[in-house]
Image 1 (cartoon, rainbow, N blue to C red):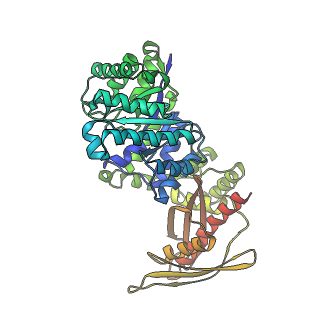
Image 2: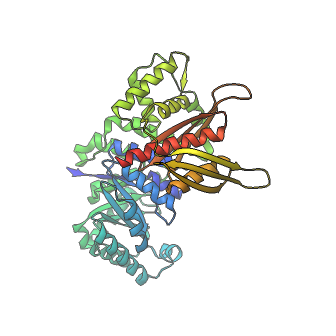
Image 3: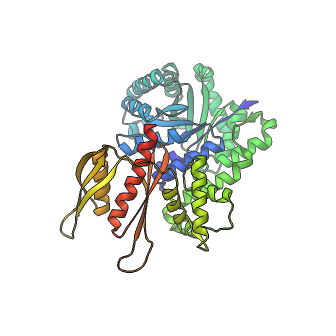
Length: 469
């Protein structure tokens, strides 16, 4: 029985297609769902010099417990260092070098002649394999490559240290029998393939991607498949995993996918991706607004809703949150998800404050940019800072970051009135993400900027306290 390794490419597909777009938070949630589903590897977005890319990979690495986190580095040895730094906390880090190997794509996409491309493959894969045990080489547009050059490219990658070779059918014009025959021809021409794991990535141009993947497994001994839980133009993770689960004995194959949860979790992933679909409007957001809890909901149901908001609470904090929920629900017919967010912010992980607010001054207007000047107190010492921003609240948050010397990813920010009238109290909830974990803070004031500052500091203090332990 061959163990078929499944790599999900949904997140990476997001960078190549306009059909959907995922936010920072949604990408982390996607990675968690795929990890729980049992995929062997998660192909992330490419890493660049942009700090947010590194932060995303770090957050995913912390959140994923079982799957390999595979980061594309192209053919740029410099990106190997960036990727490895971001993958420090990954349980199973993987580096993915890729190159177009057909004559057309080699010249027009990579801008390299054959000899230069081979040198780039050797340099990148050699550096990656010297620093990371799990290295993959992806031959893009392999089915249209000259066989002699394809042999040189794959041999170079293998001898430079790649342990996985993936052949990409970019054109998507082959029938299953033709695709299996092509892979077998490559095997005959590249003897070194017997020393590595061989995989495929199939385009669904002719609606044959799933069939081609099965043909690669049964007719050519392929053991690595790239598939997508939200399949737009690729192998369907759900279809292939279900097929192998159903006919695995017949085709001599099995996977690690948790089939009992397959349909439900793929459904969750599809809803997550549709939320980020520009053509889908605000349907999913409206559905979230219509979700409520009541006093009749069990502790299990409340804590499940808390987990769906992205929080990971200790057993003690779970008790605090549920107790606070019951006190609120006793006086309200329904408790919304936004209100549950506020309950978590106010009841979970209350810690002694490392930073307290002393004074702040906000300058803004329709003819000047917003700026914030602030003083915080830490261990009796007054710390000062000043920053500009797109508005008074953005300027205030930037000032706090400047004072503490660190920028945390702002995952969500909510403001709502809790009393009525001209002197209404405003409540702010800030959600920050650090190392893949969500921390929320709450602030209440008649001044909405003040409420926002207190909420941000409340979340920062929780992060600082936990990381100092």
